[in-house]
Length: 425
Image (tube, rainbow, N blue to C red; front, top):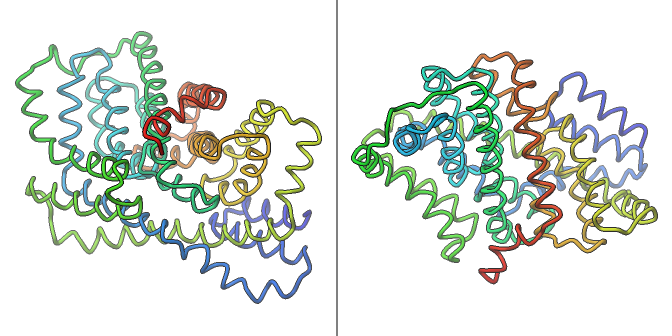
């Protein structure tokens, strides 16, 4: 394993894309295993990694997000949130969290939610007197909601890796997403009082709110159709991606803001984003496969269980490990390496696979806002031009709250499983 660690760390430090870091790490592991016959099926393993029906919805969710942003749908959602919350002190900050939750129910991607929030909120919140580091950290933290509130690309990949029901993961993600949003609202409440953030408007205007609601209805229908269809069994999570695209197009046509001339560019951006994810999936499959061939997950499980079989201590150890992993690795990459390691361990001590899946996905997503490899911090910094160092400092309260919420969910599984149990899923 020494060769594998050297190759992995070395390629990571020189700045190779994460997909190639995983691929080269997997090849190094094959060399260490010293079984030449395995090399002949590498291509097959690459193809097998992406040849999964559940993964087909990823380009659809990405395309839906691009269509919504270009069609002006997100602007209507922001107007509605502003009319509903702008009369409260710190109202625009609350709008950011609420808008992130709605976008998360459509896009399923942290990067997509963060990019859209940056595009529409940076200038708006600056006008209302919010400090740029607070705005940037709030947007990055709100992006974490993207992979937690269903539909979720992260849940899909976890389901593919473990064989658990993606539909169950989607339903189980509702309560944690809401609880995380409430946690962020508590942070906003503290900073609103500390820094004296003002209202966006003097008072609540019922007429303006109803007008904004009517304008936003086509946009609000999109998440209702997606989540309602999945929970009602009308279509599968994969089919929901295609439904999301159709709903986004219909909403844009209703608003008369959809520009068909922009469609080739939108499709190109969708293709590039999808290709990046699929490369990580394909090369990550090589790493996961070699770990399984070398029996690494079983060895780690046996080693930890020889020290303790207490499920709560085991969960704490896993969470502590994921905190460190999240600081140095991108979420999808970490999943392909560590889900095959930690999932069997969690099952061995008696954790429900859906409950553990939510905790693992939460921790891998929180890693997106923890320095030094916090992907959402990079996205926010690049778009907003806020220095990365300032964002890394100001994100701390949001990351801490997210971790506290995760610990609560880890040790009170009934919160996670309440809705799935209620629906009998």
